[in-house]
Length: 251
Image (cartoon, rainbow, N blue to C red; front, side, top):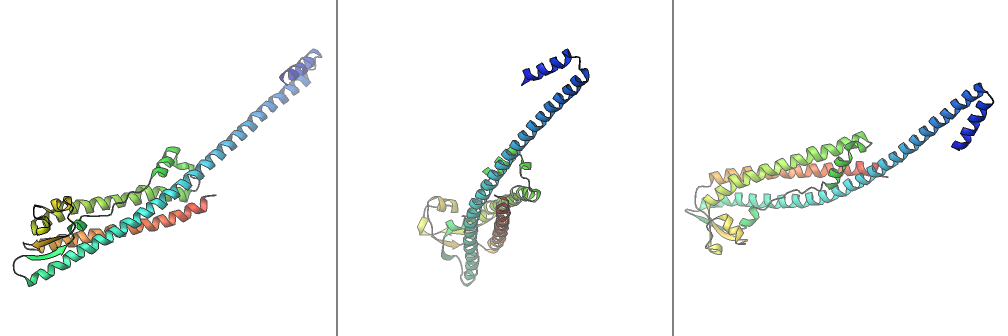
């Protein structure tokens, strides 16, 4: 093809048809430019197709991760409900002590008091999205919703869990260790931590000291658990809404 163009140009020059030569040269330039533009358009189309395919792949992966996170959340909600029930049961038991003089013994599953829910959200797809570039998601509303969920929604859960854990370790457990003594089920145990580490599930425990401080920390702990459960439920609702939005965008 190039040789043909050269032959035509040479022939026009030899015949001294300069006007025709210039028109031909201009046409040749335009053809080259047009070819480049077409090639660029095809390349852009191919890149667009690749971007669209990657976007779809990431959206599917995020939806799958959300399903796994939702299942973990449901488990955490059940665990929190159980811990609230045990905490409430212990709080109610304190009132029976008013009918006794001295220590008040009763059966209580101490190890359950220290179990808690902890969300382990699956975020691998979101990390992949950030690596690919968040703007790969063409839907502005969906892009903002995904970012808000992972950066804010899950962040609030982590903060709430940290507050609850800090209160349990620094207030509830120390007060319980001062207030309770264990019975014969763990005669060598010197602290509640030893009771748990020794695998003793249920123990006779006695309330030896005044319980006003214990009631206070139990109420505060119960409220922190209730707050944590509400946060779990809010995130669960956010997952449901986000999953529906994702389904609408997935081809």
